[in-house]
Image (cartoon, rainbow, N blue to C red; front, side, top):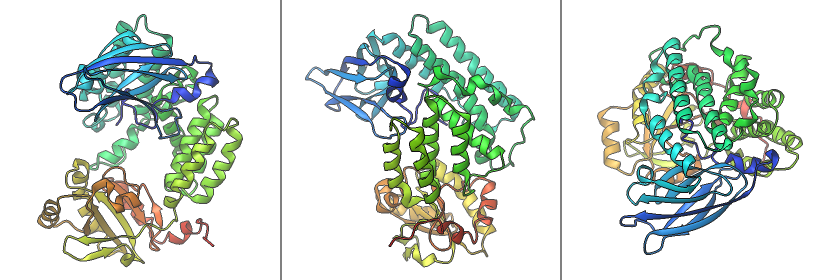
Length: 485
C-alpha cells in the first residue's frame, strides 16, 4: 500500500490547479545542481502534475554540461509536490514559488545521496529524512505483516506510527513554511485515517485463510468527525484526496451497495456531491467518474459526466474527464472484450472467441511476479470448485522466457488454459486490455463482453461468491452498451 510520502502518479501536483481558487502565490522555482560520478544520462528533469485528474505531466528538462552541472527554471502555480527524475531514478520534492534550490547527488544513487542547499532546502531535507525513517521502514507499513493483525493490535500500530511521525515533525519542522507544515500534518492525519478506513477490506483481500474480519461497533466512528472530512488546509495532500474517495466508497457499501452493483459508482458520485464541499468536491467527484469510466457502464458514466459540467463551472476538469471517458468507454461493462490468438502451453492456438457461451476469468500474470505466483494455488482451488461449471480460467503469461513459463505450467500441473504473449506489458494483448501491471484480472460474460474489469483476486475468499453470482448476467450489462449504427 502506498504510504503518505510515496504518491501515486495521479495525485502528485494537485496544488497547481487549485492555486487560483485558494489564492496561493504563483511564481518560479530555480533549480541548479551537480551530478557526481560517471554520468549515465545527459539530462535531469522535474515532473509536476498540473491537474489532479490528469495523468499527463508537466516536465521541465535540463541538460548536464561536461562537469555534470545543470540549471532550470520552472513555473508553478502554488506549493506543490514534484519529482526529480534522473534516468530511471526518482525522488520526491516539495516546491514553493520563489524557491532557489541547489541539489547535488551521485550518479549511482539519486535518492540516497541527494543533498539540498538554498531557499527550500530545509523542507526537502526534512521530507527526505521522514521518507527514509517511515516509508522505507517496513515496520511502519501496513503491508506485509501488519495487515495480519486483528482490530486492537492494528489500531495500536496505527496510533504508535502516528505518534512517532508527529514527534518527528515537531522536532524538525520548526522554521518551515505554513504550507509545508500543513502538507506534512495532512499526510500524517490522512495516512492514519485512510489505513484505518480501508483495513477491513484490505485484510479480506490479503488474508485468504480467514473470513472478513468483524469490527467493533465503534470502529468507524472516527469518520463522523466533520473536521476530518472538511479540511481546506489539507487540499494539497494526495492522501487527503485518497481518503475522501475511500470515504464515499465506505458510505456506499454501508448503505448496502456492492462494487459490482450496476449503480455503485452513481451512488458514490451522488454521495460525493452531497457530502463534500469546497475545492475538493469536484476532485473527488471526478475521481469517482474516472473509476466509473474504467469499471462502470457507458450510459451511467455519460449521464454523470454531463451532470459534472454544472459542478465544474470553470471547466477545470471536464475536458480532461471527457477525454478519459472517450479513451476508456471501450472497456466499460457490457463492451466487447478484444479477441486474441495465442499459443498455449500444449502448443495449440487459443482464441478468446472459442470460449463463446462460457464465463471467462482472465488472469494476466508472469513467472517473475511474486504476487502473481502467490495467487497460483488459489487459482487451482477455484478451478477445482468450478470444474463442472460453465466457466474457463484463461491465464495469459506476459513472459519473454518461453521455456521458464512452459516448465512452470507443466511441472506444477497448473489448471485452466495457459497461453503466453511475448513483449510483456508492451505486447498487443496487454495493450488491448490496458494492462499496466500483473496480476490483472478480468471477468467476461458468456457473450464475450466485459462483466467485471476488477473482479476479486484469485486469493480472495469472496472470489467464489462473485463468480457464482456472475453466471447469466450477460444480457443485463450488454444492454447498456449503445448499438453502433
